[in-house]
Length: 96
Image 1 (cartoon, one colour):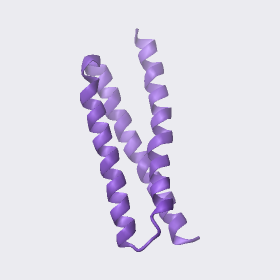
Image 2 (tube, one colour):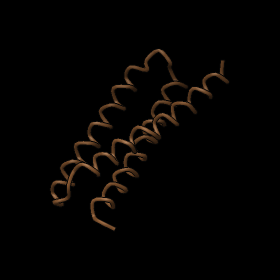
Image 3 (cartoon, one colour):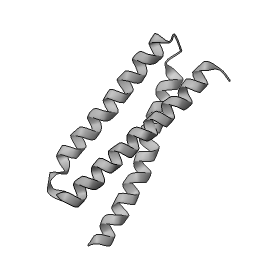
Image 4 (tube, one colour):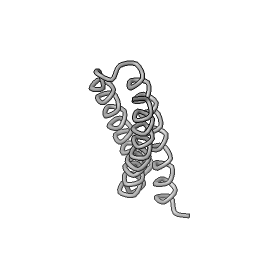
């Protein structure tokens, strides 16, 4: 397997882990205080941005083409986030 595909897979898995962390932050914020979701949103976006920037610089340092790893990271951040958001929304609906 080529290095760039391996890097993309690793970046995807890392993005999925960041998405899980974001989902935990959101779930805790929803349970504690639904009115202050803005703070959780800012924190989630900062984590996403940091992950993408770190991915970019690590891939550049390793002399790997950046497109596929960044694509993997972006998909890893996006797809699990949507699935986690659906799960959190269903749990919120059940709490009402």
